[in-house]
Image 1 (cartoon, one colour):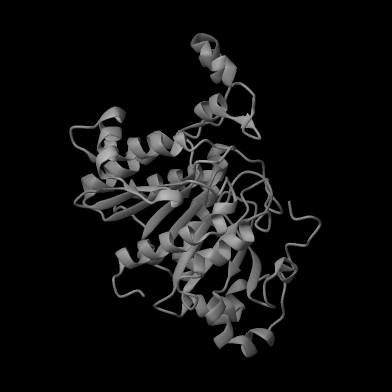
Image 2: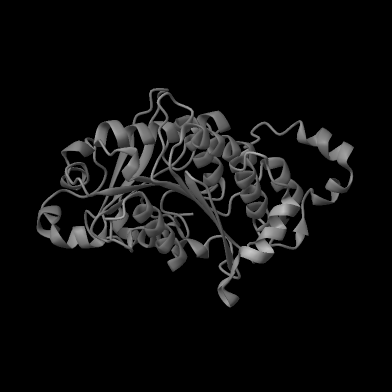
Amino acid sequence: MTWFKDVDVPESFGFLRSQTTPFSIQPSTGGALYAWHILPIELYRQHESALLAEPSGFALDITSRFAFKLLRDDPDARLIIHMHGAGGTVGSGYRIPNYRALSAGQPKTIHVLTFDYRGFGRSCGTPSECGLRLDAIAVVDWATKVVGIPPSRILIFSQSLGTAVSLAVSEHFALQSPPVVFAGTILVAPFVDVATLVATYRIAGSIPILSPLARFPLLFNYLSTFIKDKWLSKDRIAEYIRANEANGEQYQLILIHAEDDYDIPSHHTEVVFWHAVNAAVPQGITYDELDELKSISKMDLGAAGSVMVWRTKNGVIREEILKTSLHDIVMGNPVITMSVMRIFEAADPSFK
């Protein structure tokens, strides 16, 4: 929730005047997607006078704003396209500290572009799996075609529902001819698919909703047929990996989950990670085989959790399981900043 704050006034969320520009992206499918362009703090400091001289608030033509030009005209600029979770708006909950964590590693060059899906906040339309996928594609197209940022300087960040959207988009672009692959993708608290999520979800981590029915496969499978938006993340991540491996495209993928996440259990990330690794191994690998390898190879960070890294000739798939940070708090933590820098430095070692 935004608690009655006006998203057209980002300063009310703690941003500096004109640090964040609200505007709309017009998808080819019609309607309008509400978005924020957030300047990194050091870049803002260097150009504070010029930014303060501009009007603040919603930009009818963002291309006329100085902040837009700072992004468009800087060959070293990096852009993070942010895909948020279910509910709320670009200004809700822990999303504000999340934006700060995303650019903290290089506060001069890392810009953030976040948006509300159709039916969320001030974006037009009705939410659906197909619709949200098209929305995210439209945002990527705006970044690459209107701003002119090459995919190699774009990182896709997502959390919760957003992870399913980002995987759908990453798969879409990886399957293009020629393929389009971004600097990397970060998935925070991903889920296997909607049916599996429903089977494991508990209110406040304690009260099951439909999980008791999972003990009756025939009944549960029947009820699952009524799920309209399936969000098959396990299949999309596998297809994304296979496409990149087949095409010889370099890719970076980081999955992050907290063990104390009671909205989406961390086991979801372990299963999604397995599907990714299985797709990267020509002969395949079973979940148990990977689990055995983890017992030997993963880094135990004690109270900070554990890390498992799977490398191929073309890509890196990294799983980070944190001990704490819940479902949302993690988004503002240093692990996010570190993950962003890992990806941008891997894509371009000169980026510091």
